[in-house]
Image (cartoon, rainbow, N blue to C red; front, side):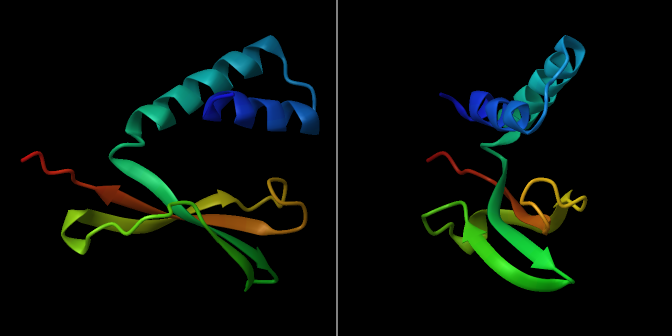
Length: 100
């Protein structure tokens, strides 16, 4: 199962998805996937009462600093649905690849 299928499967287990919602979700995930070589989530952070309760690395290799163009925090889920009872933010980075 690819990443898109896994995410859709997870959401479908949480609640039923209409055909229209499924189409929109697939389009959004396809757009996100198209940017992955250049922008990627590298750390998932779960908060409870604004205190960090858990951090999960999403990339398991070192990225040289000279390749990192920008870093930012994405408020991924502040409705406490992705991880029940926790706000979730993602640390994201834009990476520039050099072809030699």
